[in-house]
Image (cartoon, rainbow over all chains, first blue to last red; front, side, top):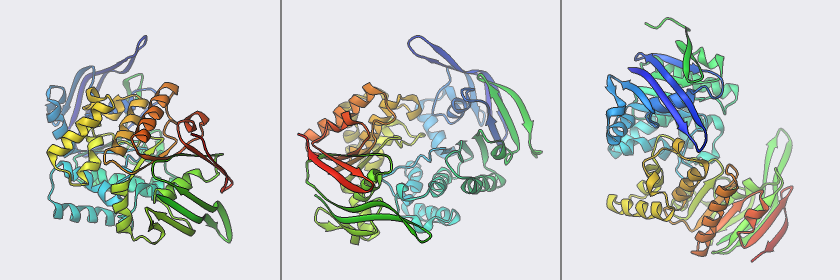
Length: 228
Length: 225
């Protein structure tokens, strides 16, 4: 599903050039649950942003479902992103002035899902995540665990093929963190590919493979479980 | 515009009450620029959240534009949020997978503003904030100051009557912070009512009134302009 070829990302500031990705090669099959680990500054979040098409590499190729993303127009990328990708971030990433219901509904406004279908889908997800009773509340009124569940609901509302998660349990206590990891695992069992950046070995072991990065490159890969 | 009477807020821990706000009474008129200050734990954010209807006092009354907020049903509260209130937070709270343009546009999608009108309103704000060139970039491609600018743009695009800001410059360096505060001053000069929470004395100087909280009480309430 995902294949990169010598991905490079360089940041230029006035005096300094920082290489965040250093000719990175990576392959991820559909249905995998891959964790990306590594010390602070190794390039993991940059990689996730490039895979999520919310940043562009300086050079190299990124194939998503055999289509090279760099060659597409911004509209083409936007289309693929909105229909195929879901994002879960450490800081929940919710819009404060929208209710829980509206936050989850938002991606469907971009993919032009009709109103009645939207309502049904949002309600289904809110029930699944046990937050239906908070649907008219605002993010600030919810606990961290509830906010992250709203964020996950929003990430999957359009049935994405790929979920990109950056430290999804980073701002949660262990019990809420476990809930989120269980939700991600269930989604993966149903076929959603997951790529997750994490510092936590414990979280990484929910997946089937761990990729470790250092200085913008992949240094090791370990299978956690056999991927069939 | 805002009238709080004897607002109290506490959290229960077993049989104990942990007080956050005690007997808060205050009025804010339309057109004021109020700064709420106080030490960590003094109740500032809780007070801001109650004013912003994201939280409720355990006791006391809150009238917003003469309507009793403490008696509101969820539907009315949501309506007021959409049409009267704008929020700016320390942590920007942008949607990472939407562009600058799309982030700013979002509140308008929810007011059923027609496509052409949306485009015009967003273009106008991008221009005002001098970020037209950034409109197709993603939050992760912007500096902290630029992200906060986008956050403010999104907060005000629906022309809220009241803007609530919680440590809006907390994650910014001095120059970026000044830019945001100057922007607030301009919005205030144009008629917006602003209530901000901040630790920074120099940020308070941009406003017209300072309220200092201490252990949940109002210790001081002074006009400064």
